[in-house]
Length: 111
Image (cartoon, rainbow, N blue to C red; front, top):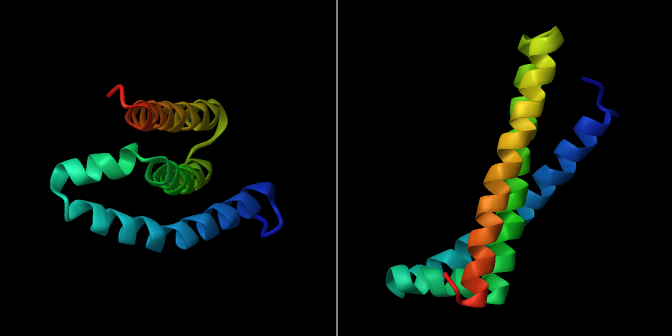
């Protein structure tokens, strides 16, 4: 894959987002866990905790999806490659929607 391809550029940007957000999420989660499981839920239910976690989760999920895309592009061809790439995108989207819905419900206090 070319170093100037769109896939590589997105992969690099998502990687930077993951690296930048990781320390903030780890420190915040470690502080929240001192309050037990309810402290962690309260952290996710706060606006800053929920949005921060979703930013980290989104970049981690997208990075994983891009890595798996590379495996698919390297080892599959033709129709199987197309179907596998679509399936990978669909599954990543479903996981993201479930996580976003859960965090949104926690922030609204309806979970």
